[in-house]
Amino acid sequence: MQLTRGQRLPLATLTGSTLQLGVALTGINVDISCFGLDAQDKLSDERYLVFFNQPSTPCAGITQIALAGFNTGFALALDRLPSSIVRLVIVAASAGADTMQQLSTGRVVLRADGQDAATFTFQGQDFAQERAVMLLELYRKDDSWRLAVIGQGFNGGLDAVIRHFGGEVAEETPAPTRVSLEKRLETEAPHLVSLAKAATISLEKQGLHTTVARVGVVLDASGSMRQQYKSGRVQELLERVLPLALHFDDDGSLDVWAFDDEPIVLPVATTHNIQGYVDSVAGGWKRWVGGTNDEPKVIRQVLDHYRQNPHAPPAYVLFISDGGVHQNRAITALMVEAARYPIFWQFMGLGGRGYGILERLDTMSGRVVDNCGFFAVDDLHDLSAAQLYEQLLQEFPHWLRRARDQGIVQ
Image (cartoon, rainbow, N blue to C red; front, side, top):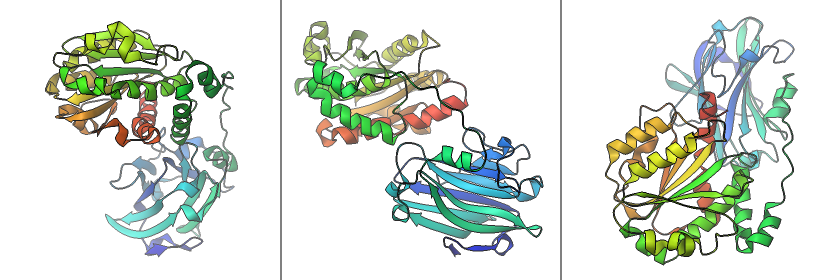
């Protein structure tokens, strides 16, 4: 059955008291929640707010689950809910600065006995500046459950929804005022100003504009990478990454390693030395590029470096490789170990092939959390700065949420 906004009908016409509900939205990053409300339409018991950080109610009447093809899903056993819970509202909220108008497509599907029973579809043009939307609700009436399709939004995002339902939102301590990054770059590295603007937009889209993190780059310095250094691609990549480090960390420094047979700790990159960095530091790239690649040695060094201070912010590590990766077993073991620590590893293939285990990290089992991402480009110029930032930041916010759930990130 195709549902429309404003429609109401008895749930019994579609399914019984046990069902699954899936929510899928494309075009923006969202968090999906289910609010269990009392007769006054209030969230009087916060244990009945189900979301990524609280995946089930005490009675297991609402449980967040993974459903293939959906952002998230819920298993509902309505007869388990206490009588005080009379209304369930499914809410989608932007995980960043995006509005629902930027949504490409959306759908909510009710399933019974493994079959789709009803679907509500919507798209960005149905909304304006809303950052959160109540999609549909299930509610008790005359000792039975009914379904209503809502599609009503809140400009204030998830916090506004929580307050609407009488919940409390913890007030964040205002962050210290930062010197404008663009003004700083105009003085110290004016050629990076346009990159900083593109980075800011991407960070806001991913909800990372207030995130504090350490940032490191690991550069493949094996002999096959010579052309990437000679053509200026590695230098350009560092200049694109530095604005991320400046956003994430007021120290404004980018940790840098290079590796072939052995790892090399290079001077940190800053606005003061970034111009001509690969041609000048440690004698220039011609002094430290050569040999064959040994990824496990440098991974171990980076892992040990960021483990030294357990109270420091999480680390974001960009690992560049042109392929020829063959120590799959050793890399796998290191990534399983690294998953216990607040370090996210973004692997990037650059102009090569044979990336081995790096391409399969998202499906690698045995880790506390998925702590890795991978993408590859033949030529850095195939991606604009904005497109590169989108790729670099795609997995990081998801890891942050999962790592916080596991107590890995505080």
